[in-house]
Length: 613
Ligand code: M6R
Image 1 (cartoon, rainbow, N blue to C red):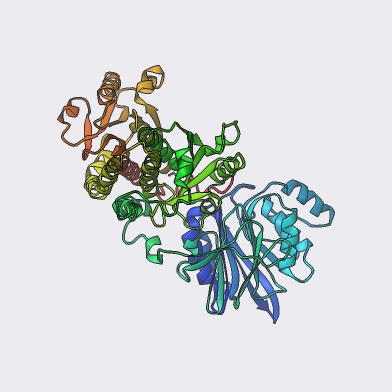
Image 2: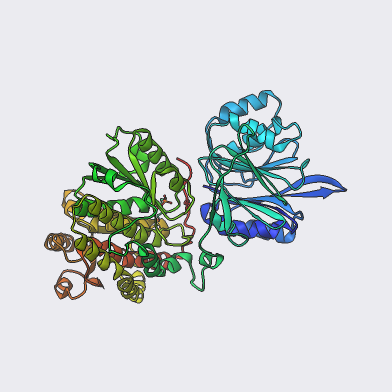
């Protein structure tokens, strides 16, 4: 889950690379580096500059000593092999220093390759698996970089996207991928590559995503793609439908806050065009025969992190509306047990990025077992979108902050639409019932705007009762439970305050022992069939001295007697509450993190897209 950028063209490469790295820094920020091709006394050379820590450190070094050249590579790292220091930063070079290479992923057989290469006289300076690949490509180099990359990558096991330059081939970049993203783009007189379209949209919106085991050769005049055998090939070509402004902060202090406030529009966009002229639900991207959906007897929703929490919310909607049993699974666990799958099983994989390694592996495991795989993803052309049988896109636009917010709410919307579509196909709901539910969802953007207006109160709470909290507990029942889990995840990942989410009814089976006087508890207490039970659970923690913040339904004045603080959300259908109740928790987490002076958009130890297992 590192970020790779490459440029070859007529302009200075360095500004393009640094700008590209800035947009990709969310993928990892343990170190950053660049390699530029230039000449020294007329002889071609490759020069490398790299620095541990954030991109700003590298930028400072480059301001003092800029690197010239119009072909180069850039890299921003999330460390896997080797601690984050200058030595382990990318790009890595071979012994001669004539070849430089950047890499995203994990090389599984690097120990064996390192031994083989040591026996052949190669030396190593870093602890990384990447340096082994640089030496392997150099070892196979006989005057044609693309041929050397093809030969080398046939020996490599694991998931990777790599890009390399060689001093003997000025103006040429060679790249290859397997199970890690890499997109290329061309403009007049220049070619670019990046781990993500965010790195390219400032230059072009027409992109080509390389497919597994494809090798691209980029020159200023264009790109050629082959397979590992050298036969001509073609990646997945598409046009990016958002522009560069969407990936800017636009006056907000952090991407996370901007993305929280973008939720009404993102939800609106995700709902556009979901019905035909007769008001029946249509899912154009879902390349699934309704007949097949009719025969589905089991649904698995599989995802990681926040996307998993969206899957937990969907479980309630699919079971309630479509009447099919659902199991929600963490993707990194799914394929290591023996899920019982068949051609009547629908596996719904959810991933904002569409590149999460565990989710991709779960999708592929499900397909191997003959299950139908649907992807719910935000990224058109992503690996998950390509590899699933069918896809439903969220239309959240680029999400840059590591903490996922608008992706979550749009995932729930897309999953709810999918649940209704299943219900329609299976005739579990009457058409007018489906229409009514959809109409309720269409009212959500305006209701989200209302919830967002309470930001000031949540900022006050973050500075008041919650200011010195050493831990925060989040409790909920029914659809409130996934939101309790998500509220806790949001808070811990950006503020580093210990937070846990629990089913409210489970508190007395253990977790309530954690409560002491003044300990903050956030309770998801909106109206619904478990409301009364939840109020009893609030009493239990209050009796032990907890300070309770309740997220309740507007008009529920009785809640005041139970909670110390209340934030209200408008009344909606019980299954739709998660779309509103998560927003105050996102804002609370955000303001607590700001108050603690945390790096909100790039929290420690994390990366936005987890492309390693
Ligand atoms: O791109 P994905 O949706 O597959 O990512 C899954 C998780 O890595 C992601 O949701 C993560 O938990 C976020 N940092 C949560 O805010």
